[in-house]
Amino acid sequence: MITHGIDGLLVRPRDTMDLANGLTQLVLDADRRASLAAAGRRRVEEYSWPHVVQQVISYYERLLDSQRGSRLPAYITHPPL
Image 1: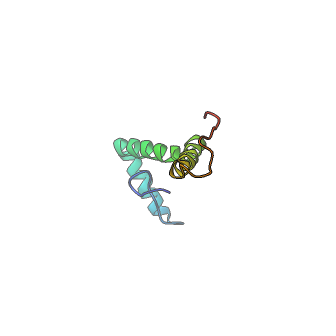
Image 2: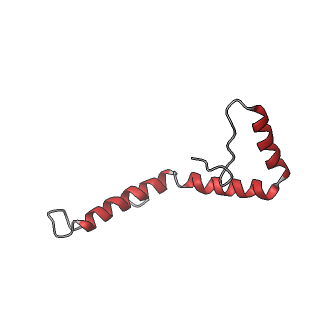
Image 3: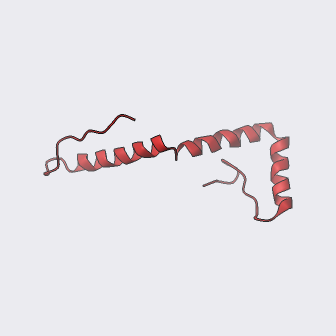
């Protein structure tokens, strides 16, 4: 997901003038261009495979921690990332 002005620019579909205006903004403002690029890269990393796997592992670890004392095993192992 792109948040307009935060990690990208959104333009109206099939609106060439809107696209041209957005591109012109980026060409003329190097600081904004760099800021959007860096924020966009951080956003992409949130959906990288290693990050998503770690989120799933953390979810299951929290689930197991919440079930301490039940009949679930006391530990679980998983391969290192």
